[in-house]
Length: 145
Image (cartoon, rainbow, N blue to C red; front, side):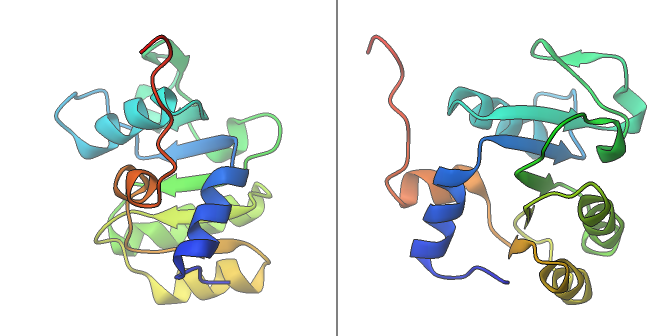
């Protein structure tokens, strides 16, 4: 099911605990790195996924080579790949039993979204959680501040 309403997106973000971030980058200037740090700061359990960085760590979190390498349930797969490559990430998310897929700003793959929806996953496309979380009033306040 493609989620487009603020209410549905807010419900997904508040029910999500564990996120696999596909296309994670070690480069601090990259959007995937910035979003990874933001999601960690919001209290999500985020596993970075990048075969080129496997067995390294980003901000103290071990990098997985693929979604198949992540043990346990995955609530959301956050996809930082181009629109064409997003299809493979969506298929991997379906195979891994993820509950939802989130395609970042500019990532639009209607066929992949339909496959995910047909498999029972919730789908968000062409949006960014770093924008949506504060916009929807879901921003967690820093501790002690």
